Amino acid sequence: MKNKIFKHTIYFFTLFTILLLLTLIVFLYNQSYPFFIKNDFFKFIFNKTWDASEFSGSFGIFNILLASIFISILACVISLPIAFGTSLFICFYCKKSKTILMWLINILAGIPSIIYGFFGMFIIVKNIEKIFKVSAGESVLAGSIILSIMILPYFVSNLIETIELIKKKYKRDSDALGISKEFFIRKIVLKKLNFSILTGFMISFSRAIGETMAVMMVIGNAPIFPKLLSKAQTIPSLIALEIGMSEVYSEHYYALFASGFVLLILVLIINILLFLINRKRDNYDKI
Image (cartoon, rainbow, N blue to C red; front, side, top):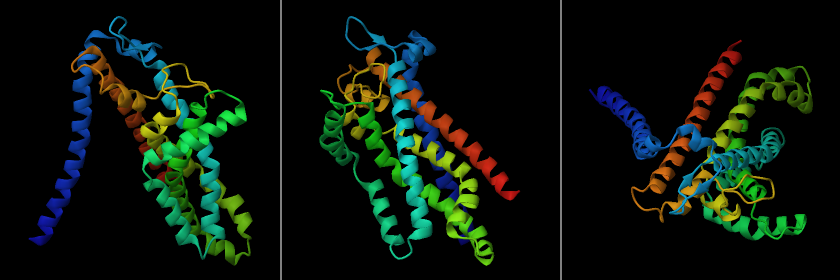
C-alpha cells in the first residue's frame, strides 16, 4: 500500500510539472493572440522598428531579438575557455582544494543578478570607457562580459560531470599503461568532450538569453541594431522596462506578451535540440 502511494505521488508531481509548462505556454499564447490577429508574425519578427508611442505604434523585434541572441552567444564564447580551463584544473590538478573551488563556483550561481548589475555598471562599463575611449560604456560587450560570469557555473558543472565520467571509464587503464596526465587530457578527454561542450554551450545560452536585471543595467536599452560597442536592448529588458507603463489590453501591452512568447519559443527550440543531442551522445557512448 505504501509503495502504491509513493508511486502515485511521484506520478502526480511529474504530471504537475508538465502541466505547469503547458499552462505557461498557453497563458503566453492567449496574451499574445490579440496582437497576432492584427499583426503578421513574420513582420513582427523582421520589422526593425520598436516605437510604442501613441502616434506611431510600430512594433518590430528584429533588432531586439538579434541583440538577445548576439549577447548570449558572445557570453558563451567568452565563458567557454574559462570554464574549460577551470574544469580541467579541478578534475586533474586540484586534489586538496577541489571541494572549496566547487563551492566558490556554485556561489557565483547564487549571487543575485542585481549585484552583478552593480559590478557591471561600476567596473566593466567604466573600464570599457577607458580602454576603448568611448563616452558611454553601456554596450553589447558589457552585457556579454557580465553574462559570461553569470553562466560560468553552469558551464563548469556540465564539463566537470563529463570529465569525471571519462576519468572513471579510462583513467585506470591509462595509468596502467604509464600514460601521462597531459597526454590523457589531449588524446582522450578533448576528443570525448565534443558533445559536452556543445550541450554546455546550449544550456548556458538558454540561461543567458533570459537574464534581465544585470543586462538591463549595462546594455543601454536602445532598440537599435546591435554592435559590439553600441547600446542595444534584449527581449527580457524590453519587457521589464515597458510592461509597467503599458496600458492594459492596449496593442503595446499585447506586443510585449508577444515578445515574451517569441522568447519562449526560442528557448523551447534550444531545449528540444539539446534533448536530441543528448540522445545522440548517449548512443555514441554506447559504441
